[in-house]
Image 1 (tube, helix red, strand yellow):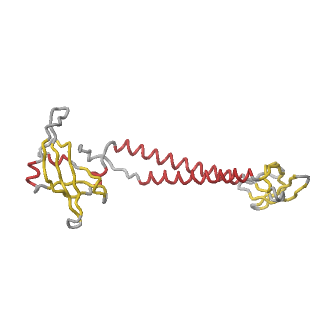
Image 2 (cartoon, rainbow, N blue to C red):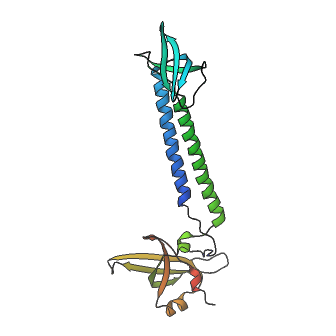
Image 3 (cartoon, rainbow, N blue to C red):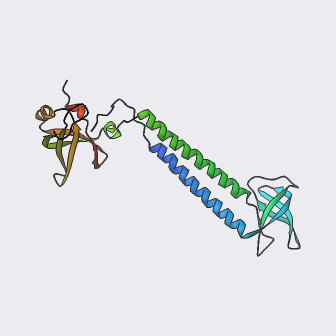
Length: 228
């Protein structure tokens, strides 16, 4: 594995992923409200009504439909219109005296759309900024959780040559956990420092960084093989 910059700053990405998740949930609610509102409008008849009075959260309107006049029909609206204002209402096809106005639904849809956009953009921007600040830092090494693996074999691979004419060492290792019940085998390649002196001084053992409890996601910092 290539050496990583241990001085790079780690920025947790959990909060950015949380923002994106909130944004996705808000978009889902937006879609649900939009579909529900459209379905409701299609199943009703549309007409114009005049606002005649406003009391608390209730708006009272007059309108005519089907040759009938309807007076003081109550609506619940998020933002209150002015008395005398013409507004659009939707009537139940079975009962013209039952009217609704979808201004509240539209405003709720817009609110969730804005919330979804803000959180999603903040999360995406945060991840991009995190990537730029951290560069190519390997968080597995930076977190610092490690195990010690036993080196079973060291191969000097002369069939592979780097750009500067060197051949790599390949280390075959294993780790046993739960008192030997589970064995994990590892192959560490792209190592261009002779590991024999280090292994002799450390009883053929190496420090291998792992991701949490996942023994299959690992990194090896080959800089420990370099003797000063």
